[in-house]
Amino acid sequence: MIHYRLRCHAEHEFEAWFQNSSAFEKQAESGLLSCPACGSSAVSRALMAPAIQGTRRDAAAVPAEDPNAKPGTEVQTEQKQVATTALALKQELLHLRRKIEQNFDNVGDRFADEARKIHYGDTDPRGIYGDTTAEEREALADEGIEVGTLPWLRDDA
Ligand SMILES: [Zn+2]
Image (cartoon, rainbow, N blue to C red; front, side):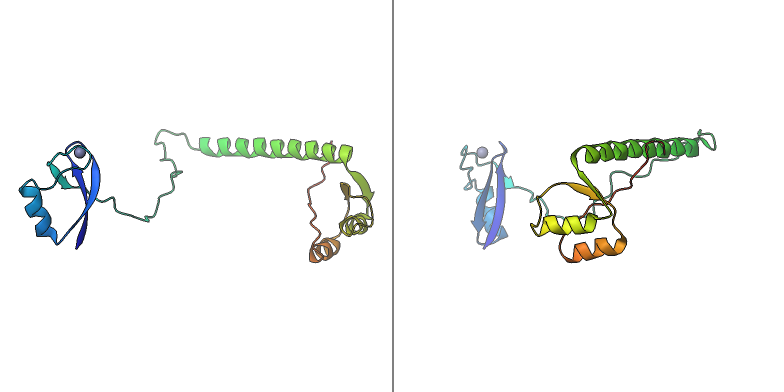
């Protein structure tokens, strides 16, 4: 038995089973096949969409080089973009810092102890910030206490 996907002249698609491919051809030629939707006997095999798991090329391809571009133009643009990004990042960090200072409790170098106390319910849960060493952060992580780190910028930096 062969499974065919069929289509009538009005684009209705349906499926049918045949003994073999010549049985399909014979039935189609003698007009025995008809579309269940419209009854048309102008039926042919529909092309099965192949299921391809292809390698999709990255759409963000490298732009073609402009032959008229002056040498050096590209580099200047790039440096400017980097500077803009760095400035935006710095402002973002300062903004974040202010938010933390307003809402979080500064515990200084007692940070690891306080974080541990909060984690184990020994003190009121609250947002805290302070200093830790790499060792302290590692120890906290080992205990399952998640700690975020961010570069602490000075306003005049
Ligand atoms: Zn039809």
